[in-house]
Image (cartoon, rainbow, N blue to C red; front, side):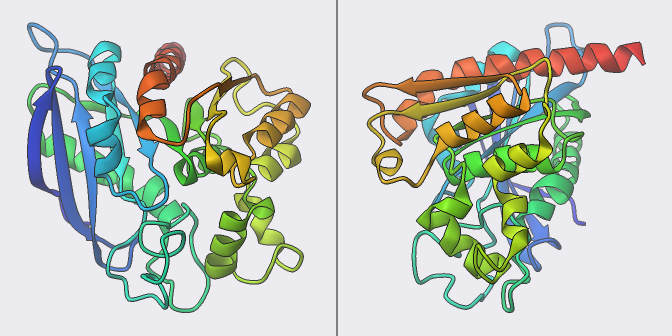
Length: 307
């Protein structure tokens, strides 16, 4: 894999905010972009390598929506962690119908590895869990600047489709992330129109015929697991009560929370009156999510040091 090249860089709250691009093998040789928020080096230099929080965005987003709207740099600086925001799908893959709607195809990869004909470039699970961490490590190392990445410590969070991605990837790769949280997640996709459309297109079949669908559904995965994923750390789920997609039954975060409770997984469920599906909602509570992940990543460092 080639080393990612820098596309743009800016600065906020002392953090470097850098967008990178490279040709992605996992995404069928298309150009992949991702953005990285890097805290400034510690005074005097020589600071320990920093962990990373991976943020997965929702339908129609690129790697830039979260970066420009959520105010994340202030929290990255305060918590001293790197934040990584990938794109939400391959771009220009030429898959059938990928530009026909906003909830499938381009900008709507749903963080699964597609198996249906024509969608070979839509390997978003492999991209996020395998290729992206390697690309981030190469980019941070090439940039230098006195900040190093601890590639062994990662957490994951996301919004809407990205909340689905954060929860399912954490459950499917239980040793990969120290913690997981979500804003307005599509938490039971086999039971909502967005999920059914995406899974039909990417995984094939239907909910009754395709047993594999449940393997990409956070509520079903937690129910099948039947035991905690993070015994000492809650999974936090934030939901706006004024979210129209919540009212329409697309999200169903409460059903995931019920599955967590049944499995003995600590969970924090926050139904916020007056808040909708927007980045205003995310920006309001993002700091609390970053603090949760920072604590989990610090605990992971202590555990690593004691081994």
